[in-house]
Length: 463
Ligand code: BES
Ligand code: MN
Ligand code: MN
Image (cartoon, rainbow, N blue to C red; front, side):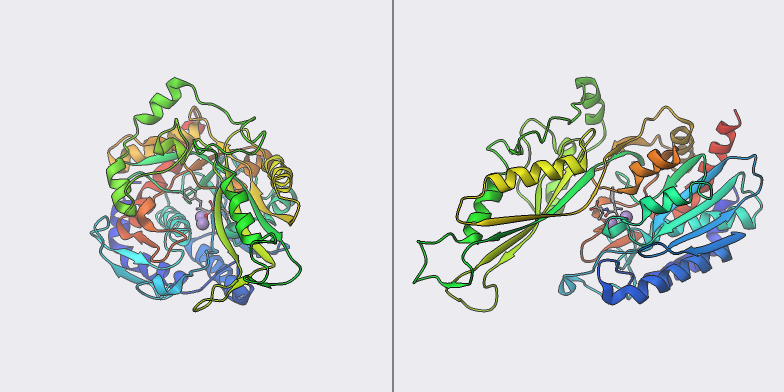
């Protein structure tokens, strides 16, 4: 595998150009106006798998956007790595906060990326990280050092909840059969602090609608005498946390796994610079659940956050009006052993119950996902750890992440394999935000590290 360094040196410009081409297509899965672009992206991903040396490639239709499949089977008796990633991206808005257009990638240096970073929607999440795998496999195939079989499954609906994927997994169990699943769709602590993600939070996402009077009213003629749905919604939302920032929905914490003091002490050993954290976000203080550290709040603890809230008059100037309706989108991040369907139900019951008599409340569930925690006493984790050791010269730190990849828990349930999350992005890479970027160094380091995972995994699997 040592020749990977030379291979990268001779091909790095092409690796970057190819990724730039992939980033130019606005594959926004949430917005149907871009559906043709999403499909174009799937085709380009398939082409790239073919060019990398996959012997079989296929665009698999689902009830939503297609899954791109590719494989290179060198010997059915050898282990098989299944690579998962997604080619869809988040909507880029708010557009005016981008320093350069989201689908016209540019390379710029930043403080954390002195070698330059590619700025574009999807650069880190997940086109850049997914494409590292395509290039790593290209290297192993072209240089005849692929030690085991590889399958790719790259989907186009991750950012909207992977709705079609459960059926796809169930219908394609044989085709997707593997020994370990490898994913780069998370982050690492810092470029000199490699880490391996050992957990993801689950998700329950709801939209609420509060209706007061049957029409918008003059706020002078009626104000003070009728239920104002915006006032009431604000009050209801505020009541969902108590003075210690605990969530007040009855039963919400019933299934939350409390970590032992020993586990929490181990977690606290991972480097975390609170001052740098606050400085990077320009906040004077952090805010969260009493009794837990910042790192615990964003990883091992469940949350409830309003993601959007609207209603009434928001245009220029003032309009004196009491709106008929108010709305909010609310996400709850879940931890083991919370169940998204149960939590959604608890939310619905509670939110309906706390509404005053004068309003009607409607709660509509959106997508959800189960939390996931992976043990580290398996050869997949060990192979990843050895790979980081080799290319970073440092021991990777196991770390539970705060984000969600809903399909991961289903992978374990349906395909019965362990999932290894080797992320190379940084929290500051602004995924889902304006000016998303991915360090060139990170991109190439990923391509360098991945082949070692294959090498060590195959060695460990063969005892
Ligand atoms: N790649 C992210 C998830 C992620 C990012 C996990 C960083 C850990 C660290 C993924 O694309 C994502 O954004 N997931 C969504 C959930 C989905 C249902 C929209 C999320 O976490 O909000
Ligand atoms: Mn992602
Ligand atoms: Mn994402």
